[in-house]
Length: 459
Image 1: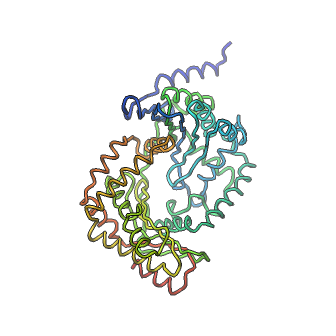
Image 2: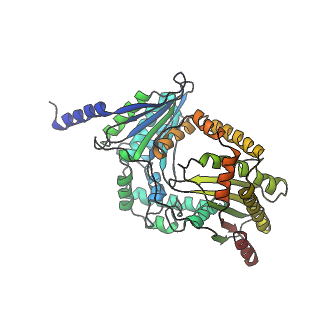
Image 3: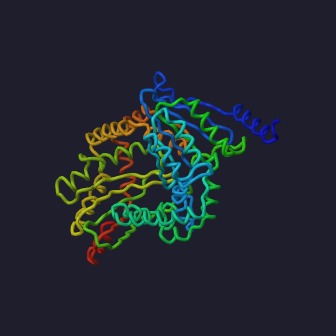
């Protein structure tokens, strides 16, 4: 005799099969590199990229939530939750989760960023069904028990302490605070000792329920995978957990953000007894959707992206003032950052910063030479392709693209956009961005006289 609940489940499964929508987003070549998307009832999206020539597969689930979605009281909740989803489900203990992937020689991990979170496993292609079952179980069936919250609190506090012991990491959090102040983008992803100690199990459980429904999730798989098989296994795992959601629900749109607060000419100095001073000098950059991001990528590469870059040559090669010096960009939904990092002896801080500031000012006024632009275009093109040589990188690309842009761009299209950047494009973006008054973050054993001189660098 079939129960009423069994009939309801059968109707739900039938309905799911009827309304699932599959599209080929990128056709690939001879079936290699084909990217497909299926949207399941309930709003869950599944994207795959097929590479039959490899023997591995990477499976990940991206959540449309990051530290930017936290209130001041909840600062650190997204990362806390990332830890807790590994602590056990209704069907698996924490040991079961880790040992299942270890037993097949795979690797499993997760990361939390300002605007998204990702959980993933990389395994042999034959073990992909196991990876799908384990990761989906973690995302849909986490218990978030009180005892696990209490135990993991100590682990996260240790992680914060470990980060604090590395001023080369902390200075980037300090720079974000310098630029964005006490806003979600300005607060650390890990949270603080005070906020982590104050978070409760109920707060985290509510956060989980709010942000981990299917409309907020993107499933991504890359490698020797079959799209239809991945969709079937994912649907089965979510259906088993009763987590497919309402059949008429639609995926959330890519984040557009609310205009972030940014400051100029601000200086944050933190005195600490370190062997080196760690500095970040920077200014507002571009949002990740800005079409000028390709020109900014070329500019960043030429300024501080390698051994031939201006900053590396001027600071390290010619003067020997620092071992590590580079520039970087961070793009968010509605804004971005451009920064220059250097680690040097405390007595050399002012000289290093003055050289960096002078180079930024010079490029803002005059731009880069044609040779520098052409070299940077080649370097950026090569690094883009080489960075996509494993299934983990491919999974990251298609998962993040679906979550953040709602679309996919082929590698050929990316290379074409980079190749199309002209010296005039780079000069225009350099003039606009590098011509802004910079802000500065410094950690190190600074003396009062040095602090006064550092303030003068950004004036």
